[in-house]
Image 1: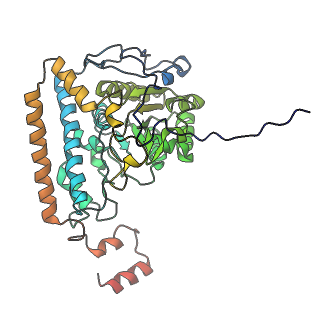
Image 2: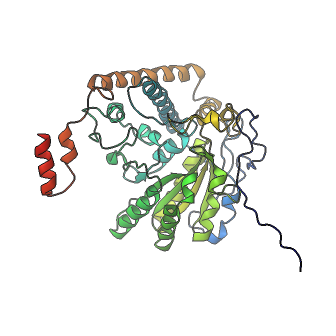
Image 3: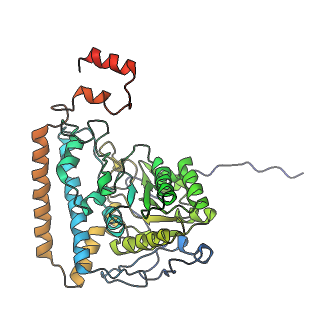
Length: 409
């Protein structure tokens, strides 16, 4: 009888750690324009190769390639660039504000701006997004005023959410932006449920749910995909694969085994893998998936392949678990720079206008922060205590009424 071999577990580990030289040589990236674009109404069985390629439009010189080119007008491209730059200006300023102790927490979107902005612009005004943290670009693309966002971050007396949410967990449903949740996995389930309700009512609005790649390892992800597939919900389910879920790298969620887009195959829905740093590619994929949903052909799972250039949040130090300069070595580049170079190549933009826009947006953010500071920063001003008792029950419970009397409000 042959001796039995010892069993062993495989524990995924990143290829580089702090102090190492960044190395992305193992990535297999399709060339711009290489991925084919099927018709919107094509059967899912005919597009099972797409999760294993990468939809890219802009090449290294900023020129569009292939059938996925959405052929956007220069005006639309400039609007997108403006929203991305505004997102970055807002992030930089509010990050500094947190470091000054004026708010408790902040999360930057650096390197992922194209995903939120292009998605926001590609979908309809009345469609609903169930976002993850790094999605403030959605609101910037829809010209949401800055002061309410800043007041929410400061949790002051003008906070539109009355101090009931952590900083940056915004809610702006009039802008198609459903309340953010610290329980990220709920985004998919809520998006599918909202989309099913829209279809049940015979409405014409679709939904988008967004999570990070780490959340695909949770049950919420699979439950939402089951409902989306079975009922052909008019929803787009997006996974932002930015390589790191807090401090655990994407391999812990299964990135070594297959792509996240390939998880769609088990549910019989299309899966697209998209260059998340390419504004045109994100736009094109979102339009393709939204048109498919509006044809009552059901859900699409999209993996946006990108890189989190900054820490997970102000509570995180990424230099503790990855090379310090890894973000600069990301082979798909900076989404803002790539869109800028595309516009310059079209002769619709230049460095002088770019720098002027950066200065203008920085001043707009600075002025909005000053306005928020006048209403009060963290600890200086806060919503009335009575807000704790409002909007909880339709008819106040007797215990709630007693507690309110004890508080004198």
